[in-house]
Amino acid sequence: MRILALSLVALLVACSPAKPVAYSAAGIAVSEPFSRPAPAGGSGAGFFAITNNNTGPDVLVAVESPVSALVQLHESSVKGGMMRMEELKDGVPLKAGETITFEPGAKHVMFIRLGQALKAGDRIPATLVFRNAGRVPVELVVQGRPAGAAGMEQHGH
Image 1 (cartoon, rainbow, N blue to C red):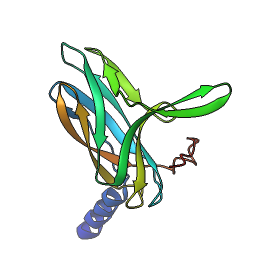
Image 2 (image 1 turned 90 degrees about the horizontal axis):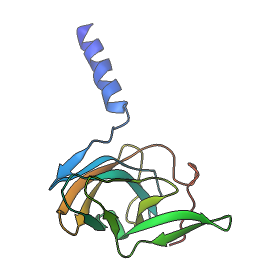
Image 3 (image 1 turned 45 degrees about the horizontal axis):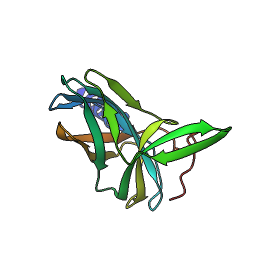
Image 4 (image 1 turned 180 degrees about the horizontal axis):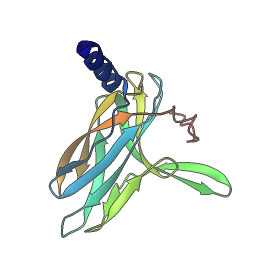
């Protein structure tokens, strides 16, 4: 009976959705990194919060990941009643002590031309590259519904 109970607990843990964790390096804290399911060959998005715990400003200049052909920093906004998205080519500045949140419908990371489908429970390796703090490795946990189903605009890359 005890083996059956332990097997049931192990099964429940294995089937539970993976929870995002926090990462910290060189005075930069990254919390709740996640993504949504997306098809192979399409685009996916990444979300998290970044806190600059350093005494000076910094800039998130890039994000790197092996899951897609191209990774860009983007920001969505509504202008003239239309949802628009633009690449943040100069990066994302962070003042000392500031927290910036990347979330659906706002700042986000775009994984363009995915080499594989992103499925709930998958972990996406990525490295956030900062001008001063350097490289901060993270994993984004894929969770929930596909981006289009969650209301985020579709990206035509």
